Length: 235
Image 1 (cartoon, rainbow, N blue to C red):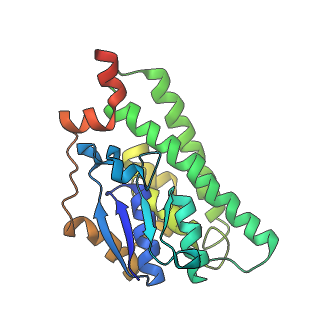
Image 2 (image 1 turned 30 degrees about the horizontal axis):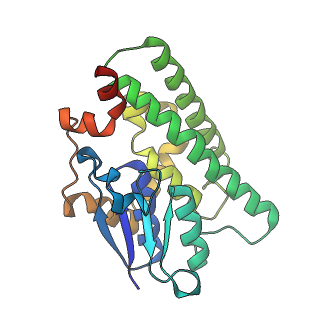
């Protein structure tokens, strides 16, 4: 049965599209235009209560009932366990290591990179303290990933797993987050990013942006819908 992928062309969305492609699961993309506020529609909130993409609906969930899942790390883990693919060897120690790094991406890489982008590129007021704080933390988190990859091919060793997919989803944004010279400082991350990007599944995942009308312009409408707190402050 076909999984519904409710998504937009973002780092967290790309994590799930590459996982679905790698795992060979049939799915259809349902674009959620976050620049037009579609993430606040009641129909989407019923799937993703935190009004964030991505989210999936698996019609063949446990006991054969439809299941909605939100949060990209949770979705990756669900899909891997559903298929038995791209998981490390089944031992408590290795599973714990996988969960540690999966959560590291979800709670560190994503939030700090996202906030760095916001305060560098989108905040209505340029706040040096905020820019410095989030850039520092983004650089620190990506440096931890790069150091990890200096000693192993993939995040968990010799096997390509959902942790690498999670890293890859955000890695394309590294120059936008950290600056044009970021790849020079993160050579091991760049190696992983290039290797995964060359995989057919990643190429198909990237091609989704050409099949769907993903709006990328940060115009006034997009700012109102993506940063509603600024509208509230102005009232």
